Image (cartoon, rainbow, N blue to C red):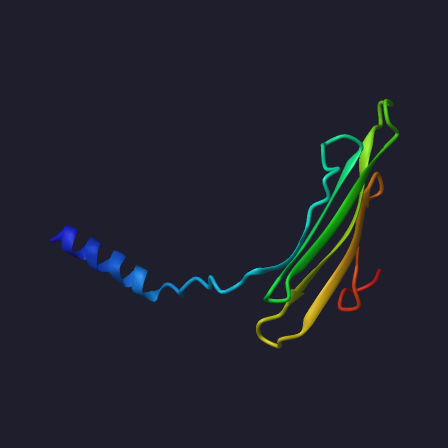
Length: 107
């Protein structure tokens, strides 16, 4: 009897799960040939849904104890409820992660 109940619950969960949307395709994909892992990187892509991401990084303070990456980039997404496109530009370095966007609150 427990097996039947468990099986019914599993079937109910499987039927109730929303279907996965496989309709998104990559519209633009940028991957330069110089991404060999030395001194930084760069990449970018855009999906047919409007989602996009671009990012680049440079190695700073090379050879020193405080060597780190300074990252700059942006990502874009579309709010499914309102169909509004939002873009966030950011910098991430020794001073932390600093996002900027017209829809983000300012301090």
